[in-house]
Amino acid sequence: MAFYVVQFLTGLASAASLFLVASGLSIIFGVTRIVNFAHGAFYMLGAYVAFTLTERFSGALGFWGGIVAAALVVAVVGVIVEMVLLRRIYHSPELFQLLATFGLTLMVEDLVVLIWGPDDLLGRRAPGFKGAVDFFGQSVPSYDLFLIVLGPVVLGILWLLFQRTRWGILVRAATQDRDMVAALGVNQKWLFTSVFAVGVFLAALGGALQIPRDAVHHAMDLRLIVEVFVVVVIGGLGSIIGAFVAAVLVSELNAFGILIFPKISIILVFLVMAVVLIVRPWGLFGKPEAPARRSPGLTVNPWRPLTANERIGALIALVAAAALPFVGGNYEMTVGSEIAIFVIFAASLHFLMSVGGLASFGHAAYFGLGAYGIAFLAKWAGLPMVVSLLLGPLLGCLGAAVFGFFCVQLSGVYFAMLTLAFAQIVWSIAFQWVEVTGGDNGILGVWPEKWAAGPASFYWLSLAIAALCVVILRLIVFSPFGYALRATRDSLLRSEAIGINAKRMQWTAFVIAGTVAGIGGALFAYLKGSIFPDSLGISLSVDALVMVLLGGVETVSGAVIGAIVFKALNIWLVSQTDWSKLVLGGFIVLIVVGFPKGIVGTLEAVMARWRPGPPPSKSPLATSRVEVAE
Image (cartoon, rainbow, N blue to C red):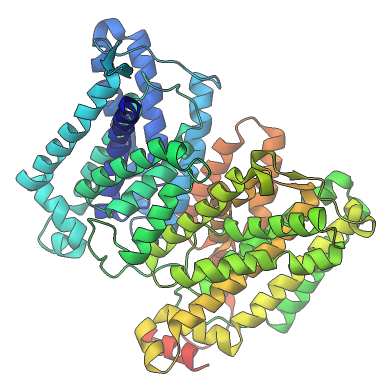
C-alpha cells in the first residue's frame, strides 16, 4: 500500500510542473487564439537559463533567485518574440501561427545546442530539499513534496490574479469576446503582450523547477509539448482550473499506467483525450468556442482548372523530372524518390485542408499505417510487390475511415486535437506492440522486387505514382463531389439547407486523404527497406503541415511545390551545415511573415495582376454562390 501512495505522490509532483506549463499555454490560447507550438521551447529555455544562473551566479542570486530570474529572463524573450513576430500574424489563420511557432521551435533547438552544447546538463539539488521523507518504509524526495504544495499555491495565485484584478477581468473578457473588449477602448496589443509574457513566465518557471529532478537536454521541448496539448484540451482551452485537474489526471495516468496497464500505458492519456473530445469537445471545464476566424482554404475566389499552356508546362516539368536518372547519380535518384513520396503525402493533406477546410494534426498516422501495411504483406505474407502496393495502403484507408468518423463530428482546433489524439494512439500501439510491429526496433528487410530495386527504376515508379495521385486529387477537386465539399467548407448551414450531407462529405474526404497518404507510406517502406514508429509520429505530421502551408494552402496544387522545396532544402541543409534546424526554422518564419500565401499563392497573386479577365465580384457572398452553383 505504501508503494502506491508513493507512486501517487510522485504523480502529483510531476503534475505541478505540467500544470505550470499547461496553464501558460491555456492562457495564451484563450486570449490570443495562438496555437503556440513554441511553448515547449520556452519551457526548455527556462531550464537552460536556470541551470546557468544557479551554477555561475549562485553566490549573487542563490538557487531560488536563479530559478525566478530565469523565468523572468525567458518572459522578456517571450515579449520580444510576441512584439516582433506574433503581432504581425494575429489576424492570420491559426495554422499559419502554428507554422510560425514551429519554425521558432526549430530555431531554439539549434540555438540551445550552439550556446550550451549537445550534452545533457545535470542541475544541482534545491537547497533545503536535498533529502527524502520516509512514508511507511518508502522514501519520497522532499523536493517532490515541495512541488506538490507549489501546484495548488500557483493555482490560487492565478485565480486571484484573474478574479480580483482589473487586468484579470480584461483577460477573461478577451477570452470570451475580443472584439467587444477592443470596442470598449482596451489596447489589445499590450493586453496580448502581457498575457503572452505571463504564459511564457509560467512555462519557463516549470522548466526551471525541473532541473533538480531531470537532466536538461535539447529534446525536452518536443517531449513535453504533446503532453501539454493533451492537458489543455482535456481541461478546456482557457480554463486554469481545468488545466490543473487535467495535469493531475494525466500525471497519475502516467504514474500508474505502467504498473496497472503496462502494455497500453502510453496510450492511456490519448484515449482519455479522445473520449473527452468526443463526449465534451470543449473540455471538462471549458466553454463552447465562439465561431472561429476564417481558416485557410476558405478562399472566395473560385479555383479554375489548368489552362492549355499550364498543362503543357506541367507536362514539360514532369518530363524533365523523369530525365533525372540520365543526368544524376544514385544519391540524386534516392533523394528524388523521397521527394516524390512526400509530394504524395503533402498533396493528400492539402486536399483535406484546402477543399475540405479540415486541418489535421495527425495525418502521419495514415502514412505510417500504409507503410506498416506493406511490411505486414510483403515481409510476413510474402505477397508480390504489385499486390502489396495495391493492398498495403488499405490499412491507411481503414484507419482514416474509423478515426475520421469521430473526427468530422468536431471542427476547428478540436478537430485538429482529436486527429492528434488518434495519431498518438496509433503511434503508441506501434511502439509498444513489440510482438507485431517490432516496437522501436521496427520491421526490417522490406525491399522492393528486382524489377524496382534499382535507384532509377524505383525513382520512375515513385514519380509515376506521385503524378497519378496529384492528377486524381485535382480531378476530385473539380468534380461534383469537390464542389459539394467546398460548399460545406464555405458554409455548413447553407450546404445542408440545399440537401448536402456535410458530415458524410467530410468523412469521405478524410478517407480519400488517408488512403492517398497510405500510398505514400507504402512507397516509403520500400524506399527505406524498413518501417519504424517514427513514421507515425507528430513530427512527421507537422512536416506535412509545413509543406502545405509553404506551398500555399489556398491553391489547388501548392503542396507539390511546398513538398519539393521543403524536402530538398531540408536534405541539403542537413548535408551542408550542423545548424540545419536554425536555418530551416528561420526560412519558415520568413515565409509566414513575408509570404503568407505560400510560394504558389504568392506567384499566382503576382501573375493575376498581369492576367486579363473580368473584374472581381464586389460581394464575397455572390462569388461563393457562383462557386457552389458550378
